[in-house]
Image (cartoon, rainbow, N blue to C red; front, side, top):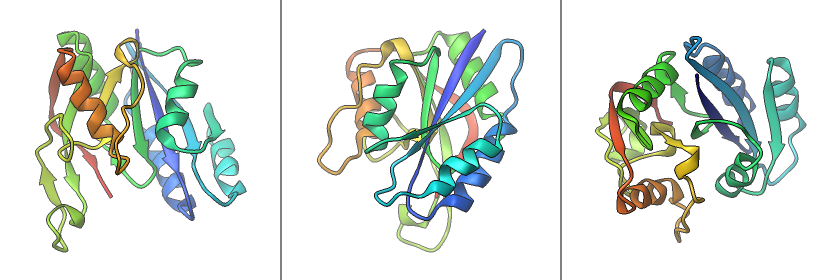
Amino acid sequence: MLQLSFFVHCYGDYAMQLRCYLAALKCQVVTKDYKIDIHVLDTSKVNNPEFELICKTFVDISYHKVENAFDGCTRILNTVKTDYVCLTACDNYLVPQFSFIMLETAHRLKSDLVYCDCVYDPRLHGRSTYTVLSTVPELGWIDNACYIFRKTAFKGYPYHAKNWRDGMLAEEFMKRGLKIDKAKGILVFHN
């Protein structure tokens, strides 16, 4: 059995987004071979007790108050028994088959990192339309919601001046020569 741990980072006044995202994660297709667990990382500068209350309304969701998502994920990951990890923000959306497709790809190809394409918000091209981002594992061309990585291959998120540490991690996996594969399909909606 393979386990995928989701680390969902939330902040500010995104309570409704968190509620919707957790509901969507609870709809992930799981099987006897592929399981998930969910950890919420509250990075709010001002305390928002609603985030913890939302987590309690769902079954088996762990709430953590952290300074930032990357370091919080790294720290908590040391205490979590899992095979693969996905760090994502609460304003994204993953299709219900995301976990199944990503874990099946990782298992079949023995991948250290599996990524997929996404529908990206209007900031991508500076227009007011959502477009498909054909992701590649390099800085500026991938978002942390678009990939899962093997826990045992993880050495922490590399530093980046603009905090684009998700792209830096994908690049680091490439530089280390780890097994990286792309899953078929557009599985993520980025906001």
